[in-house]
Image 1 (cartoon, helix red, strand yellow):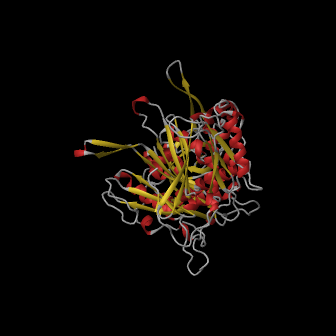
Image 2 (image 1 turned 120 degrees about the vertical axis):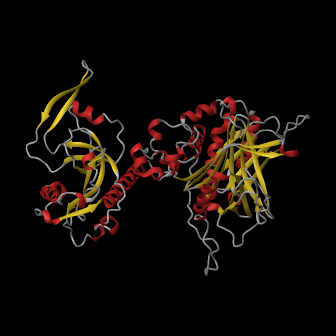
Length: 600
């Protein structure tokens, strides 16, 4: 076995030399050129069988069949065959492949898919630095998994010496595997890699290709703050540009090779959550937001009352951690037999505001968090604000405890570093400086807004707009605003909600007086630095926007604005902008303050 002295990393290990080698990686490869004479067949529909079309002869025999292994799963297994029949060839730039030398006992016809087992790889010595191939000049060696005669071939050493020499001589003579302008290579200057190293090359090539695809998507997306805040319905072309949906699917072959490890990214498994939650996420996540982990919570039943005959139900939910926020989303009401998604409650905390993440085991109480014992494990997420912290307490089944531990480890990485010797710095963490533009409704959103005409009386609308204009400081701009009519069950008249780069402004008109006097209009301002989290309820049973504001000592205030379901478009725009803005509005506290708040 010839090898370059600088290529010590690919020397076979002691386990490989002793024969204790794990089964090689299995790839789906497409044969391009047979190494020797083979038969071509075609379907015989009249006789319901197969007919010999012709015998394909090869002028110069090759030591192996030449094949290609795609980095991505083919969209259709018959695409290549149909392209050959139509005289077209696939675009190699769109369909990346890896070169494979398929060692067969009988040559395989072109355009035939073969499940091939890797036994190694080879390349011209010293070609790593100059080769432009995605696997740095390596050609993979594989044997058909269905070929029982070659089942004993597990590594390079199992190949007969004459076959290794033929492979080395052939690849040394092929300029396609050498750097441009290089001198002819002798067969003794060929490097060999064992099966495990070849499998690592394939995985690295796949990871590099996925990264390249993401960069292309990011470069093709128009930049600017408005692009990140496009909410609502999207066309099919726009949906392809959504980062958390842009992960290619996992093939059955990848599942066989890697098991659940094929789902290296949370977006893969996110497609398996109920469809209603996927729809909710399309309304709430930004186009360039990346999902890091998520945990589903099934509907839980807790016994209560005398002898435990009563029951309290916790609706199904989804905990999501992205590179921008911790999002808790649950059903307002269970679909049950009606099969109607009633809507969701979503609470968002930017990762820049995280102040703690802790698991309280089942059956245990927490004195520090002032929590009683519960039959379920609980995840406590704390978010900080200028005057304290708010906590979110979530109960999960015991089976979710391993996932909760992994999520807690991930969330702890977003917590601030202690200032240490820097006395002036008590909170060190990376913070984004969001650049959020004013909301401009799209055409479909304008149509929805037109349907709201007449719900708020003109005189109340004018008073609210006048109060908003008077409350704005010089140079302060309202990025988005929404009107809500008077609703039965809530005191007061119509309401207005607006968000600026620094504040939330909440206006409300009083009830109409019997004497005919003009009702009073109030405007409340909430600084975003005081807001620990924002919450949006979108449901057929009622909608609301909430801002959770901790108040010392250990209390919290919820600024609550109810509205009707058709008015979700402007309130959703405010919700998204508010959770972006509060990420950069808080500069930390020198001393921790008591936690407040509770379950969403």
